[in-house]
Image (cartoon, rainbow, N blue to C red; front, side, top):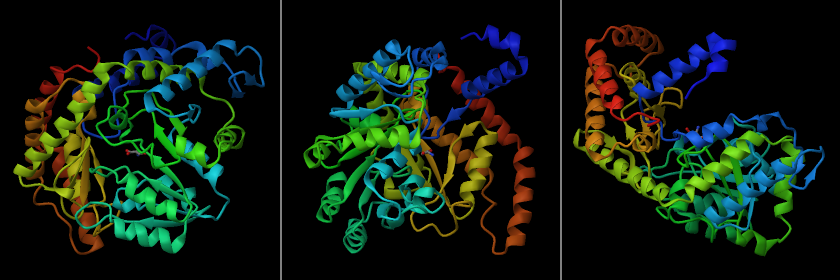
Length: 440
Ligand code: DSN
């Protein structure tokens, strides 16, 4: 990759890009929602398609000069229909959150009741959590997982039958198990709710048939495009045959919700990159890689368990693993691992004893490592790195008073800054990464 023009025009930004690329190369990236966009999609993102305004949909634009943009958007739509086996797709949402908000606009009136999995139990902000406007503009009721980490179907039944939501979300950001699409949708259908599956984290599993598809049970499917699909950033909304059976015209509401209710101008360079990524995803190597992501996650989970870590739900069915590391330890581990160039995120666990800001868990996943070519042999090393970092900071744990905790955090930061073992692990991590370059 070269950025000669950027280098000439803005050396400061050029330098920051190089630094970030170097960071990505040398880091073991375990955040399960991140991926490596392919070089072709990155090239597509850098095309002059970004110059064009295209208010509206293909062949119905307000501005002229959109004949090629129309072709591109149509191509993205037809490839998405083929990949996801759905009759209707909108590829214009800027990302997952705007896509989800468009679903609310298409199906609900303000203050209608909606239901989703609680954020603290692995759910997503946009499924009605109070920190998002979806939890303020709607009467949000939340369902939970059980102490063992699996979705509590009896709780789902109670929440839905008692509150009769207009819209029910199925999907989450930190759920290591298969989603019970059928069970939740059957309950939601009893109260006549719209059912939306947000498959952002697992869309690649669904299209590779590694996870059962929600298509037969739900009306709407949303996804981001930049997680394990290996695509550029963006969002999509799909309508299934089930919805078309219910109301053949309802897809028009989705289109209307995206444009003109919420967004105006599609990001054409992004649409192009999505079209290219869809083309790549229709190839068999895409499916094989997805199987390896799951194999790596299961193997890594096993190795972490052998090292004595407590896994939520005792394992994983997908690309992510949730570890219960103890109160406040989520933040300590995230920061110490960062020093060793291992990146993951702190996360709440089921029945979280502290809070989302100082949670008791960490969330990690295998997509990027697998995309770099790492397999089971490397997963064993990764488990070992995490264990060694955890041992290095084992004296830091939750303290009773706020003053004690603040004092301890200060000491912790000084400690990890000067820790030689973390530095040694960082060198080993960089060496491992150097054998698996991101863009070969
Ligand atoms: N915040 C994203 C994640 O990391 O899972 C979901 O939107």
